[in-house]
Length: 242
Length: 244
Image 1 (cartoon, chains in turn blue, purple):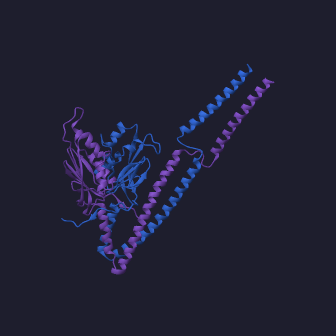
Image 2 (cartoon, rainbow over the protein chains, first blue to last red):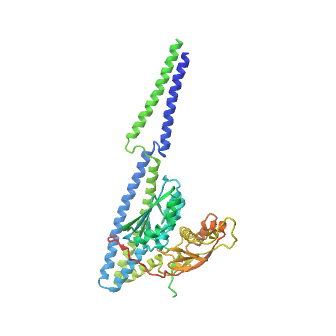
Image 3 (cartoon, rainbow over the protein chains, first blue to last red):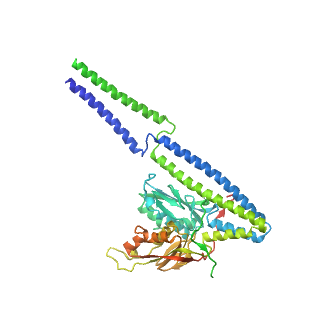
């Protein structure tokens, strides 16, 4: 009899212990990932990020110094010479087209986001990134003058591709949400995007379980410049035959 | 004696189990008191991604600074030798025109032909399945860009940053000019990778070929010529930001 009592006590304690273990494991599973080691690792990565940011800051400063010196040269002569003034205008125009200058103006911003999203996991928008291509195409058809996706300016040879569960734009990895900014006539751009049976209409009606989109007209859209230098290896300029 | 012994054993067991439990609890508490607290894998993932973005940016910036330094040297030598930076600016404008699409270019690459399917409809298909759509062309263009295409054109229209590919019934409109099928895409870049982007069995082009019988053919050409954009730059809404 006594033996049974002891066993019952032992059994109940084991049950309690098991319960606590199960709760523990559950918590770790519900909060995705996580481990005892992670604080140190997170700190290390955060430090690296801080270092990189300050490095970027420094480089940006150096760049703006260099650019102001270049401008000095360009403008010192422009005062005296109309020809050089015109050349400078052209230079600026093509720098803007190439995405080498930050620009601003009225336009719209579109935000695309997955409804269910876990970082590092494949998501609906990743496997349907042609939505971004299609929206850019719609915006261009509606007369957009400049477009950027997550601060990557869309230029003539901008590519969008999926690799290791990340969308790369201009070779730079991007994180959700995807914000497409466009400069142009806000009314026309918005109307084109929200067209009935258009791409966004389709997304809102049939894909609302997976992704959501918001369109906002803006008085002032700022599109920052691309830092990537484009150098063609294969294409060589030739004299026009016409 | 035996009764007492067994009771002692149970007590000892309980003691051990509770000490483990207590240890576990303290460990748990200790953890939540640390600076970073509980860090989920998501946070680390986000951080890692930010790091790789910043790394890319830093690399680009370094490249850009190198280029600007070069420009500065060019300006200085030009002023020193000729007294004017006119020629240097002209050269810069030309290289910008090349990358923005306002200058004729030539180089190795591929010529891709996209056309409607020639086969009969299967029972479950609709006629629209077997024709080329604007989105097909758009995706193939992006595939080519991902494969390293530097310059592209559709039916002679240079693709620039504001080029649109608009569906216009049975035709598509590029840069405001309308064309019927077949569509000829010219691309300058590494011919081998460009050709692979169209011919690879897992590509979008292959899906169009296999599933719908569309014509998507690529041909390597050592001398692809692409003429410049025919229109003008429109800048009615945008202005450059001062100081940047």
